[in-house]
Length: 284
Length: 312
Image (cartoon, rainbow over all chains, first blue to last red; front, top):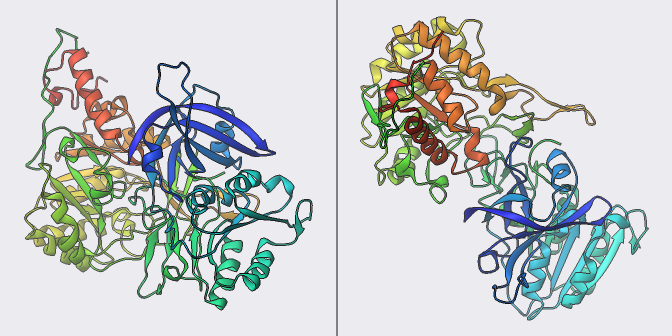
């Protein structure tokens, strides 16, 4: 955990409104766990003021510029342009200076090898599931259910397929894959593979629906939450979520940054949980 | 004008506030640095002039609903609602960690009533690891207490007088900028026995999501901090320094050494860094180094020579 002053290696639009950025990140291959995030500083000057939290899509090595140099370590972020921070971010080029604070948060619990795994990703919520799939495919059967509003929201599915993940796509307008909600696909898959454990990340309505389905069937569920964050280290208390057993009299708030961003479903309060579903920190 | 003479190799950076000796005049603002431990992986707490902890109340406090924060132009709004573990848990669990560092600990506290303020101060009075108390009479984000005491000079006088009777620790009172004439509140708290004043707390503000037509904060109104508020803060510190004899700690939008220098030059004896900690967890170390560099370059042998050196 430290602040890394580094540079952008590449930054490309992969689907309308969605970008993939590679950032030079020595140490991250060893450090980063699936489900962790970074607090990303887009530029040294204002705006934006605050860093933005981004889930790590993957870590890796790329060849150095010349043979005598060691390979370059990088992390990859995938982001959707939603506001002022990500608008500046999409204009960054190779060599532009940026800062990474991280890797932060707890990450996923990988569970036991024999269990079948179902990953549920809604739009940009797919991001933290890739590293998870990478770690699990060798020992477990992994299925990915990817949902979006339209085909533009369906990203990186072929990369999951290349890992050996079985993928199922659904869109609300039917422009790609099955027409409908990803949660409908989840119900069908759980009918067929009732011994699965589920990992989900996406917009809050999707997360809530996934929780309801899994709870009714007694299926173990981990969710990765998004929240507005100022610090990412548990100091500002801006990103809290209501924990299980939360009441007005005995409140139990958990920081999404330090107690999460991944939570076992049973650790959260689902009755009246209010989590902001904005992807990046700060106002649009 | 301070005439640059020769380069000073090791300028003196230590300052003293209400009898507490600080290695340098830089400390975090309460609520932006947790209980110190959260930032220990990123910044050496021994480097700091002091550590100021998250506001503590008599009983644990839940805080507000979310969203609690929102970025605005060169600033941020927050309405955390003073979520904290309560003074007993603070004494039991939080202060112990900070004892390993050679850095004074200033404990920020607040209450819903005068009596609560007094009780928290009394419970902290016998805790050896506490160097000083910072009494928050200025939080804009809670329904009761807080800012009520900060905006009514009579209420401020009464509350500070009561706390003064319950503690022998140095007492810093944190003021709100959300008043018509800050000099009146400043004098009232000085008269009531404050050993030092710190200012400013956040300015009340609001932002609206035009698509949903809802406030961006669940609490509707929040406190504005960050670079956007610095000129207002410098002005208020300048005014308070003119009005009182006790030392003043300047707060508001400091993110670089140059920003801190403005406050010192108008007469603040120390500064607190807030929102900048979120942006760069090492911000205070950079500011401290920058202050030292400035003194070297400008031939200032002791940073105290800079304090209140404003030329009008």
